[in-house]
Length: 335
Image (cartoon, rainbow, N blue to C red):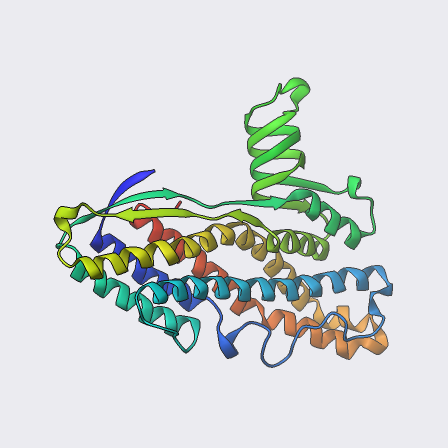
């Protein structure tokens, strides 16, 4: 889509992205990297029982989620590094937030110097599209529950881009005979979705297995990159070298950050599932741990470590989602 974006609104977008970075973990603040560490393999053969197998799956999901949040930080910093290169700033040292603060400040300075006040930028923007593999989610849940994959129910809330073999609460492109869509479903597919889900995959399983499946599938989400082209009419350009640098920087780095925004939507939904399970396990921690007898102390430590990671992971993802969506909407970019 093509929109007009004045430089004040672009400045809002860029400033808000600094807030996004504040929500991303960095250095010593990375969830699970300091103090007690979640390690699913540290308590011996506790996974031999049904309860142990499910607990181990949850702890594995916790490690996966920590790595996914770290990956978001890396992708954001990559976007800022790309902008720094185009702005002629050279290699920047420091945390993700420190680097991006400096880069965005320079970008705003060049943009303000490069075009007239209240000038509009022309924006062609194609959002990233992220797809979760619902069959992978079913497979993770089946392994955790020790069931056949066919016995696990996974619904797609969004668009089932493959075939929705069930009722579609939305718009169905199939024949919709017998109450089943049998085609692409734009809405919620209440049945099996063969192929990808452009939205959130919800798994019907025990709490630990649900967290394992949804986190694992969302962490492997595949996204088409966001595409963003920006320019301005020649009549509003007052300092062409600085304008050229700013535009090149926006094109080089901002699409990467907008792609992260899209990736955070399914990941954020999985985080909600994981957080609830972590809190429930924390509430049952002493009694649950004691059921593992000789391994009780180790299990208790692992549950405590997972619970301790909740605040950082939840804040990181929530702030990233809320700020990036708000900033994009205010500038007419994103969705």
